[in-house]
Image (cartoon, rainbow, N blue to C red):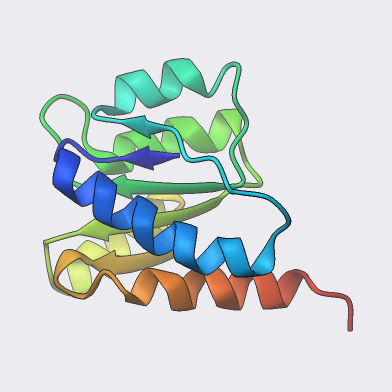
Length: 125
């Protein structure tokens, strides 16, 4: 599930995740895209994603509020904040809301490393 109010960013995230996950999973991963937290929350009642990316700053519902509500519906999903905002307070805000990780929009390729590390942690030792 990709939640961002900018279509171009959603496309870039999907392409990066497609590249990352196509190697590690059978078949093609499916990413549903939403331009608002409200749309994503409505979809989460019928679609249970393994991975959610969410922008912190969106037009109607902010990303932190969206994350808190998504965590109630899908507590086991990997939630990664994707934001153009920088600073320690931004990271703290995202993590307190329930995010598992944070990626800055000026370094979107870092999302592949977060997902890769998460998948490695799921492997039996």
